[in-house]
Image (tube, rainbow over all chains, first blue to last red; front, side, top):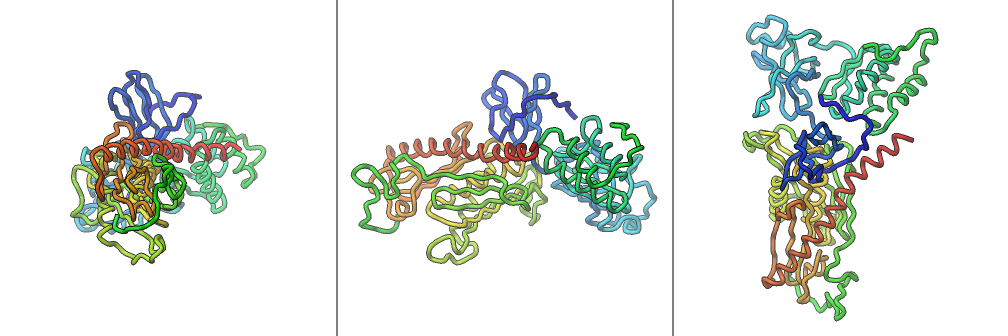
Length: 238
Length: 246
């Protein structure tokens, strides 16, 4: 992911707005018209070296290779499963891409409709055909816990700078939390703690545009879950 | 266009029945993100027209045979509520609303970067809550704001406005009376960054000079409307940021 320029005035642009007319190259979500770089989505203007692009504020998830995402099985074939990963297209998961040996036609014994899986996007070709795998460390069928769905544009906010937000959430709520690049987040922990974690995540999504969010989330969780006084809470241990 | 009236649509001072001059448009109001369950939405008022637009997608295209393997399609549904006009409108699609749905989706397809989403469909729903001439323009104006609000990549936001002729005067943004008893109605929609025309229809008769003058006025009005469209989208986020930092 590109690095954001620190402490820049956040300028909101809408499609058609001129981002630059002085010869910078178009970055993500930008196009050139008559020598001027223009935005193609609503978002925040982002300058990186000599390219200017837009970080989207809204919009659907479009998978890119290497993304780790959560998915829900929506259909079963004799040699594959169709997985909804929140993209415009379903992602087929072939039997050769799962860690089990599956006989032809025996797919439903391993994963059935409604099951949640953690998978990785292998590739997305130019016709947007997605291929995914479950053969990597950490990828698995998910059991227990709950799935929270937020906009994929807010994922970086949930993780925070070098993971500060997510490690704070994990430490304070004592939950296992995994964030998928598609904005689907899996939370597993004791009922009350998980409730707070889910609410905190929803709060992050809602207030993603504001500053000092980590502090306010910390305050929010402290109010709900009294933290152990002796236990030293150290920041960003991951 | 159809009827005749003794009504003076434009008086000797060049004033129209609602107190506007020939080059004046009705008051505009644009709001983005008014619906929670749609991916993007917008509400637009142009004078007494009240229009709501909602966008879903890009998502898998159903029915399958409409899919285009090279690009996304824009499916638009323009619908008038039965209470939107003074004589109750029979609900459901009719010839007029099918036509308007078609021209609006064709206008939007010109600005949306459809090639980014092969086989997908982008669904636009336009509901006319109250009509007072110029609903297709208001509908398209709302739909393009809703598309931008949904985060769909597009080249520009399209505004649409009508020009026309009534009582022998070329007028901007006709109201109901001027539309019914006037001589011509020319709705247009443009891409503001290039001034390309993506929608142009004409009902009635005008001379070439009147037409050119009308288009010039409507394009200027579209640019004004475009500023409000951009403002509505940006307002949504500046407001939210303030709320968050309190």
